Image (tube, helix red, strand yellow):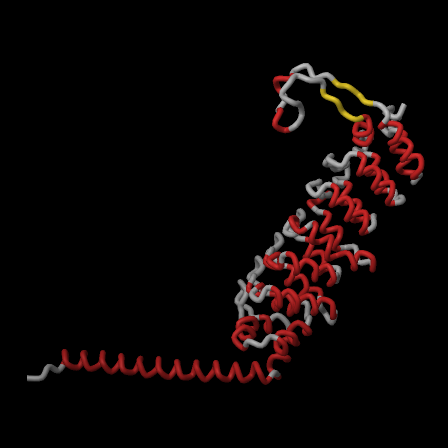
Length: 356
């Protein structure tokens, strides 16, 4: 009876998991555990012994009824665990279902969502921690190439904020995984102003700051685009540059640095940060003078940026020094040109009026 499926492919366990009945789910699992199903494999020679499917001897392959039960998927490819997570039932139900078959790596349903992804999206930090520890190698994806880490970046409740450090650490092996747009979970965190998640990522792998999406934009570019007076985005920019000192050097597909993007969106707070908080004059000069593929500097992207730069004493001094150098170089070039002209004229005169 427990294995029978209705017209939608649901077993009694699916329905119990969805309804949130902890007691009934527990009873179904216990009942299934009291029986064993023996399956015969007709071609033992084709089985890989080293993978643990069969011992060397030709024996019957025995699977637990509990394992069979929890692995049954309905027409939407949802197991009972998927249903429990989608219905946001008591986390104890999901824990019971997961522990019933700890070695099984659950597949994605028709929506491309794995149980781990759903646990992050709808569950509690304790449940996610439990699932990761019981099977660290389990699938973590979702539709569009998103991962459980992308989902975690969007969970900004207080309970998750306290668990970011430990959960990100457990998922550190996928920190550079990207979705269909080439964006990491850090891109998502920056876009949704989740600085606590950003802190956790910086602790496990700050090099993710160098990862560009399909437009060539890093998380730093996205933070600059989103800033516009937002303290959280400015803080994100500070942290990324603090942990990856040269991540500002990455250019997008249009040859723009993060300040170009800020200028395009008139996010002058980003410019103020560059001018007032980056200590290296050389770095500041390089950032503000860098030209994109159209030959434009950031200050040429918006009049407000040009105005701020014209009134900044640090940049004015730098510009003045640069102008003096250019004038000196021009003077040298001019002198060299005249020397060359006089030399050529002297040669011409010697030919036309040879001395006897």
